[in-house]
Amino acid sequence: MASSTAASAAGEQKSSWVILVDVGNTNAVFGVYRGSEPVCSFRLSTTLERTADEYLSLLSPLFEHAAIDPGATQAVVISSVVPPLHFTLERLSERLFGCRPHFVDGTTDTGLELEYDHPAEIGADRIVNALAARELYGSPVVVVDFGTATTFDVVDPRGRYVGGLITPGLQISSEALFSQASRLYRVEIVKPKRLVGTDTAGAMQAGFYYGYVGQVDGILERLTEEMGGSPTIVATGGLAKLIAGGSKYIGAVDQELTLTGLRLIYERNRQRWT
Picture 1 (cartoon, one colour):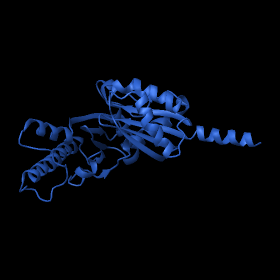
Picture 2 (cartoon, one colour):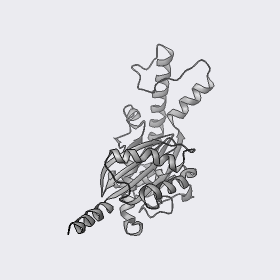
Picture 3 (spheres, helix red, strand yellow):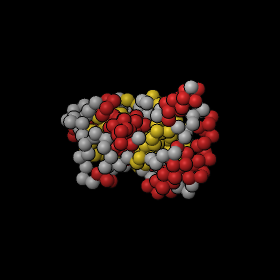
Picture 4 (tube, helix red, strand yellow):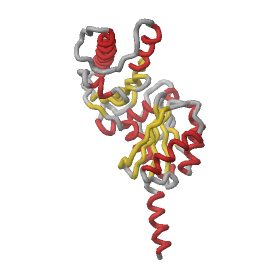
C-alpha cells in the first residue's frame, strides 16, 4: 500500500513540472511551472562556447537548492534566437530533464496567425511575446521587447501578427559609442536627474536615456497613427521598466511575457508534446 501511494505521488510530480526556456542573445531564463503557476526561474548568461556539461553543472545546484527534481519533468519548451545553441540545449534537456525539448518556431501551432512574408524568419521570442500580449491584453497590441535588440511587434485588431520593427538595443548602442570615442567611458544606464548634463557622465546618461526614449516614442507614435487606433503598448525585457518610466505610450510592463507565451503554447500542444 505504501509503495502504491509513493508511486502515485511520483506520478503526480512527474506530470506537474514544465520547464519553459527563453534563450536570448544575452541571457537564458529557465522557468519552472506547475500547471499555469510559476514556481521559480533561473537566469544564466548565453554563452555559445558553453557545453551541455557546463550548463548541467550550473543548473543542477540551482534545482537542488530550490528542492525541485528536474527528472520529474513532463515537457521542456524553448524559445531561442540562438540556433548554434540548439544542439547543446537538446543534450542538456535529455540529460537533466529526461526528455527532448520542443522548440517554438514559425511552424509551431500557436493559434496566432502570422501575416509575414517569410514566417520562418520570425524570431521565436517575437511570436511568443505577440501571442501572450494578445491573450493577456487583447488586440490591437504592440509589444516592445528591450533585449540585445529592441523589437516592436504588432498584433492587429483581428488578432493577427502582422510584423514589426527591429532596432539596435540600448546596450549595443552605448557600447558602439564607447568603442569608437577614445575620450568617452562606460557609464551606468539610468534615468538622469536632469536633461542637461553638467559633466561627461551626466551628459552621456542623458543622451542615452532621453535619446532612446525619444526613439521608442517616435516609433510608437507612428505605429499608433498607422494602426488607426489606440493599441495597448506592452513592454518587456531588461530595460523595459526604465524606458517605460519616461515613455508617453507604453501602458504596461510585463517581465514574464515570454514565459507566459511559452506556457500558453505548451497548453495548446499538451496532448501532442507529453
